[in-house]
Image (cartoon, rainbow, N blue to C red; front, side, top):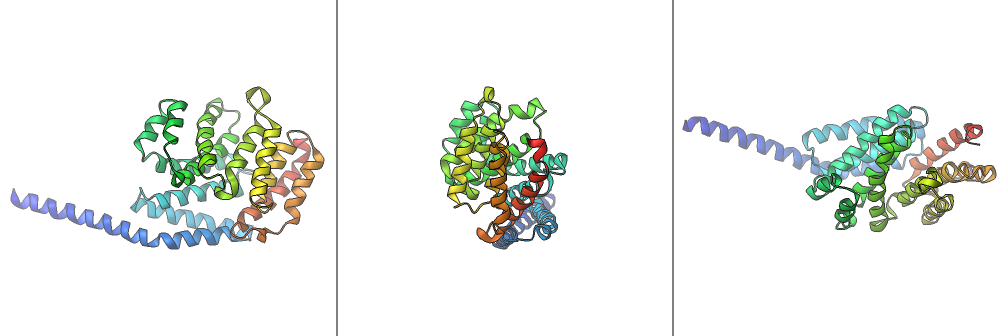
Length: 288
């Protein structure tokens, strides 16, 4: 009996040591992964980044197999899958984009659901969720943003599904807290979210084109007109919605004439904006 317990203790200790060592090794890799993500966002070649992203994402997921609660890895995975869906899938392959947006959402929600209060609040109504989020500090803004951004991406591609549209209420609560905590995060991405919501909704459901415009202008002003995706969202969810062709063309022309290098660190996002500008131009007759 003593021998059996001794063997069990040894095995358990070995497994614990192995898991601990894996976590230590991964934590030492985190600065490398951060720099890799930065280098990717600094990439100005749209196609090169497209080929690089999947390998990076599978590396992160492989590391998550060894350290599934690692918040840095979860956030990088969420950001990566959301970026890939936005930049390379949603226009031409919406069904696949929806799956990637959900994967991105779930990685970010896994961070938030580590807080039992958040998990309980999700199940008990929007007012309880608001109350829980009111206790959160600025360090929660990235996970809230990527959960909301990814979820919104999925909903935007699922407007014929009532169940998906109902979920927008929870997404708005997440993003409202981001706006309160850190509105400048990811180049004012929360402003693009609310601009899109007010532009996309019909008036009877709270849509308001002028509010949409004001939010897009907040993002544009924040980055001194250098984050070109703001013009893409403004063209699609404001100019097209009010049927202003001249303004639509003006927004897209701004993207076309700007260099992707105008905002260091966001070259890839600006390259994506240029691709989207070309796509929107090709769909202009459908939009108007």
